[in-house]
Length: 186
Image (tube, rainbow, N blue to C red):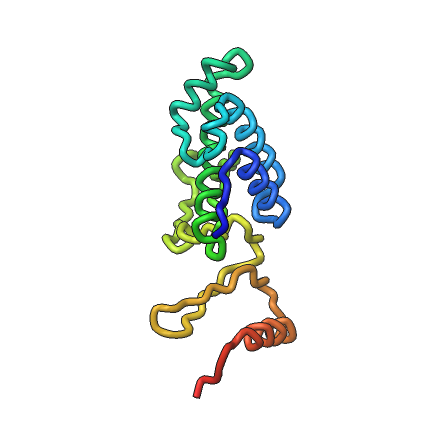
C-alpha cells in the first residue's frame, strides 16, 4: 500500500506539475507558490506533515501575528485565497486524478468605455451551459466545445475544435477515436 504525503513541498510540486503540463499559466502558478511558501512558513513540523488538515482562518491569523510586519492585511487575504485554491485543487487531484480539472475561474472582463450612452450598453446573455464548463478558460475564441451524445446518460465533450476544421483534420480525429474503441458493436 502506497501512502501519499501532504507536505508543503508536495503542494509546491503539484503546482509545478500543473504549470509544466500547461494546466495553469505561469503567473497563477507563481502566485500560488509564493502564497503557499509564505503562509506555510509559520507551521510547526507536526502541521507541515499534513497541510490539507490546516485551518486556513487560523493560519491567516497566525501568519499576521508572526509576519504581519512584512505583509499588508489585504495581501494576507489574497494569499489565504491562493492557498485555499491550491489546496482544493491538490485534494481534488489526489481524490480523482483522471477526472481532475483545475479550479480556476476566468477573471470577469472589464467593460471598456464605449461611445454608447449610459443605459444603452448591449446586453450579452450568458448561457447556463457556458458557465458550467470550466475548460472554457483555456479555449481560444475560435475554438468550441462540441457535445456528442453516444448512448443514454453518456455525452462526450470534444474540446478545442477549431471553428475552421477541415475534412482531413476531422478524419484524423475520427481515426484516433476509432483506435480507442474496445470492442465491436455487434
